[in-house]
Length: 387
Image (cartoon, rainbow, N blue to C red; front, side, top):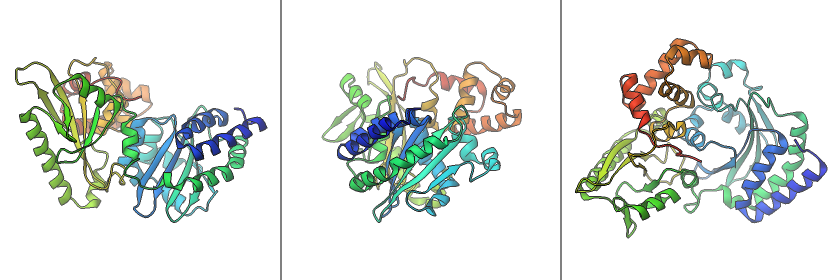
């Protein structure tokens, strides 16, 4: 940790530079994780007018973790009601305020924070304006332990400058169709991803998808609309329309209850002559479930991969495609590596029955029934999906 006066002045310069040039916030987050001796930093902005997550950025944040939190864990996060009661500049240190029992039993910790080794979290409500609330978090694992007092004092000295910078740039923390959180996360994916309306209007393509469009005739965008071979395009749009009708008929409460569960469908895209082929996983994102992060209307997400991709397991993709929790991703990966359920339980220090219960959940989310079937599916997933 470097908590010297020279370091303090350096971070002030970074803060005000980022206030003028928002793309420079990333450097501030990355350098502060090192100086403060923490594992991750996360800045969240919530648009209070629309109740949408409008900003999510930081350092050393697994992309699939951000997606998982957005889909599911924010709905059951016991810290958020406590954050609501805080004043500007006030800290919440977890799990000290929640207790060891919550860590030992709550899904937020058991399925999400602990598998990512983010047990300790110090959160501060930076600003609470009529337009937006901005929350600043520092996360640590078992090796780092809770935020050290000297590091907390250092960050506390930076708070007035952080608060001033957030107020100056409050537009960065409110809803913008030009800078949706979902688009930011998709841009971090190495796997080709296209976001479109259920009717086929392309709204966003990440860099990998743009490269795909240049390298194949099977997937194209023409006049702002997705183009595939006609039989597959008709089937894709039919399925999207079907999912949209189900979504509209499902109360918001039930959408919340099923958030995080894998609801992707797969489609094989082939040339008429049986030549090149691609797979597309697709799902429909609900504005209510995603807090508006992908937009305020339903959005279809398509993830493409070539069946000849290297057969290595990418735990990151398991959430994006199937909605597996971090703990379930770990079990699926160990199964594919040849470990038995008993060996997995021993390796993770958990009960055999717990692993069996998680495996049943994996079967349900991946639409498989037996271990060989699950492993075959895992070995055909693409690798290196996320940065």
